[in-house]
Length: 67
Image (cartoon, rainbow, N blue to C red; front, side, top):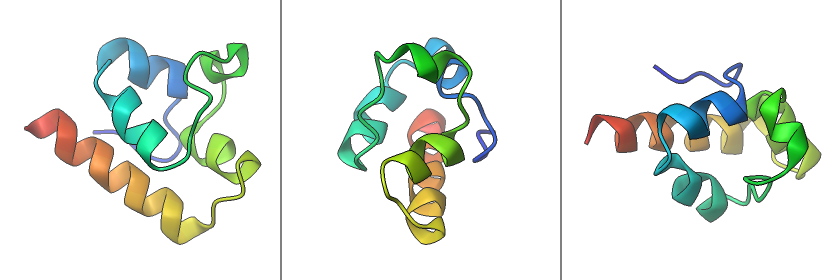
């Protein structure tokens, strides 16, 4: 299960299709070097997202990897 503490790079490595979900939610740091060690929550906050948006992103990523 993915959490907001999950590292973006790790999530993308294990679940490449999650990139589409991240991009859709405004997390455009898919290819950024920082994504290798930055959590989903930190990445979202850098992009101006609030807690509700972070939770929605994590929920959709988890839904997509279960499909």
